[in-house]
Every structure is written in C-alpha cells, then in structure tokens.
Image (cartoon, rainbow, N blue to C red; front, side, top):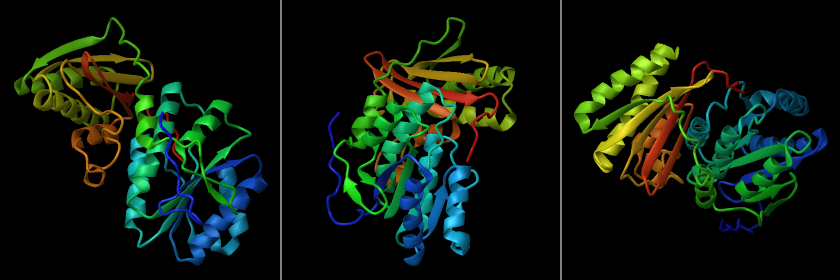
Length: 322
C-alpha cells in the first residue's frame, strides 16, 4: 500500500476525518463534547451516531444544548448505504457540518468487518466535496488489536479533542480499497444452482430463475424485487460492457442467499466501483452503485478469468441498526 499524507495545516482540514482512540469515558468526552459544542457555537449542524452508553454521556454533558444535536437511533445498515447517508446529510447542510459516527463492530463476520473498514477508508472520499468534519471514536477497551491497527490506516487525522495531527500511517483510500479486493472469494458450493445467459433476451429468463429461488429461500416480496434489480444490473453490465454473455449461480446459507454473476471477459476497477454516488464521484458505474445500495453486501472481483459480482441478501434482517 502507498501512504497518503494528511494536511499539516493548523486546525482540522476541510472535510476532516478524525480518528479518536479512547480507553475510558473521560477520553471520549474530552474529544466529543468540544467537537459538538464548537459546532453548535458556530451554528453548524451536529449529528451523532454512537453507542447508547456514549449517547447518554453526551446528553448529560451537553445538558440543555443536547436538544440542538441530532442523535441517531438507527443509522448503520450497510457500508454502502451509510456512505450515501453521511454524504447526503453533509451535502444538505448549508456550509460546514459535523458528524460523530461510531461504527458498531460487535457480532460481525470477517467479511463484514472488511467491508466496514473499507467504508471507513472511503468515507474520506465521500466527505471530500461536502466540507463536513467527521469524528470516528474507537473504544480500545472493547475492540481487537487488529481492528485498532486498521483504523489507523483508514483515517487521515488523529485527535484527542484538543489536538488534531496528521496520521503518518494513513493509506490512500483507493489503495486500501484495492487491498480489500485482494482477498479471494470462497468458491460457491457444488450444489449451487446455475443459469447461463447469452445476450439481453435471456435476461428475462434469468429474472424468473432468480425469483423462483429467492421465493424458496423465504425472501419477502420487496426483498425479491431488490434482488432482481441487482441481478438485472449485474447481467446488463456483462451484456453491454463485457463478453455479452455470462453465468449466474445461486445458493443459500441459513442466513443469506447468494447470487453471483460472472462475466468471462469483463474488467472492472473494483476499488471504487459502486461505492460513491456516480453524480459526485465522476465515475461510471451507476448500475454497480445501485447493486450496493439495494443488497446487504456485494463483493466484486476482476481476475484473468473475468469479473464476478457476488450479491448477498439476508434471508431475515438480523443486522441491528443504531
């Protein structure tokens, strides 16, 4: 990975993305309270999404001014949706805004942790056109050492509240995201159902194939519709921009349904594909962005054997929002 230097100028940089490592309530409050109060004093919108415990601490410290802050009860759904939500909230503010966002890490699989760390890296890019300040607290008492190390790779600035300084360990978001894609996807199970399509006329048949298996998996009607849109976009990407043909494989686990579309000759810059709103990212890939917004997760890989888009939908929504 190549490193990216943060701005060394005085005070937080525009669209600053700060990492706060805290080991007790006092360290959390030493950074979070002035972050919120200074924003309120400057008439900047202040948005906070953190743990119930930290929310209660902040409400007590801010006292009557807590009513001027937007506290989120539900926020983190999927990494792609959270990126869009934070970006849209910052763009909607008149001038600078402030967000304190503490990603909930408990109970995540290794694949989910990888995608949420990618989210942390790409958040720097999502904020770049907004003028927002973002403070990311990480509780060193509860989080594993490996995750705390990764946090230092994904944030350009370190803070204690009273001091902000460039983070020499920061890795450029594009490089960090590309490294996430170096992890191979597990092979589909041997009993995965398969459908081969050749040209746009067979996409309708692919929809029927997908809908039938999604119903068997117990997905609700709205979730089936979301999955069908994702499959349409993945197949259309293969037909329009790849080999013109491809293969779809579908299988289930107790918690998820997987739908994988492979284009044998496609190429894709998966480091940023579909993560940032196309209108602001200056990139192609609206279909890939739709896939990430509608699915619970989407893994994309390009190898010498083509491009694979693996879509995951929870059979029951078990991810708790905060």
